[in-house]
Image (tube, helix red, strand yellow):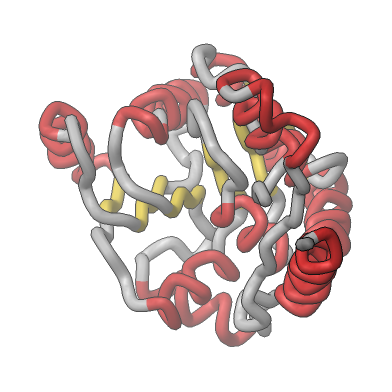
Length: 232
């Protein structure tokens, strides 16, 4: 059982003898990931000193997550418009992140905030109050943060690789993770078009509603029943 068709394809590539045995069952999004109230959103933005909102990333800060490309894109936006929203990063540093840590520290005075690991309740609030969620990861088996952002009613920009197009569907914008300029263009689209951002926010909520643990459990139960039925 795999958590995405993309992972199923990877599994079949490395172990072709298993291809016919693979079943895709999507995981669920916890119900606490939901749109926030206007007061909740305003309070979180005040706390971060970003009354007009911010760009947001959640996940480990490591090379696979491609956070450097996100920072490149953000700097391009700031070059074009000094009033572009600040960038907020939530998550611990991972492997190979020493250079990234130095870069983040150097950019802190310009509006880049790295919050480190945060409590789950705060993470939900951070999702809810973001203007745009960006996930430029090079590879994801599923991509929980993108789905959680959609569940919170936040428009997303994600990589056009691995499982992310499958998970996001028509509810987000995509960019080549190796092209920070393209990433900046997609972010700018959502910052400058309130109509497009609102449309994708609604689509995201509908899309995320498909990922429910009750559904995953029922499908997993059916897999067990099928396997046990075949057992001699």
